[in-house]
Image (cartoon, rainbow, N blue to C red; front, side, top):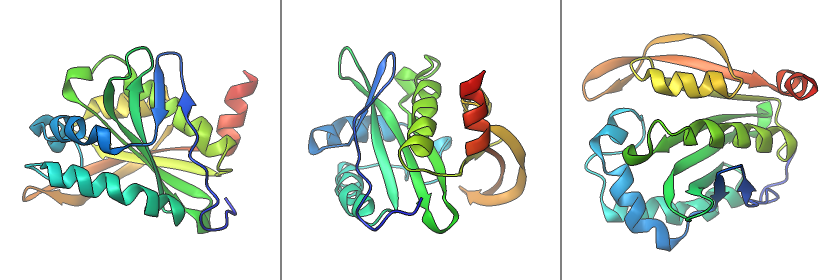
Length: 191
């Protein structure tokens, strides 16, 4: 990913059921509601709890600058037919390594519907085809097996466990790490 700062263009990404688009101010209340759910907080590392409207405003306001500086590309995950916002997915870019860390969350009312997997597959495609990355990786709390299933279904491979890698609510958490390489992605297209 040899991009010059500010050269990444955030296009609309589509899947069979979803539309991935930039967040806007119209999303503030929905983000506050969905990200404010304790269950979402409990399964993520960087969402505070309680999560306020001002948290949503600040987070959404940070997106243009992060994109301009090629730091992170963040998409709203929406249902194509209704436009309903169900979550978020991102690539935290590591340009010097041609890699990115994928992160995502889905609002609890939309769990177990395959939205995270569908969005992850499309985001991986975007990362390799449009951003010319070589490696996309992600991690999850090992107690959140559903997130691990998303990564496996998206074609990522298990790389290992980072034991007690982070601390959340006073408890150390193990993280399982998954990744997919450009060569693996390209091989999957041939099959």
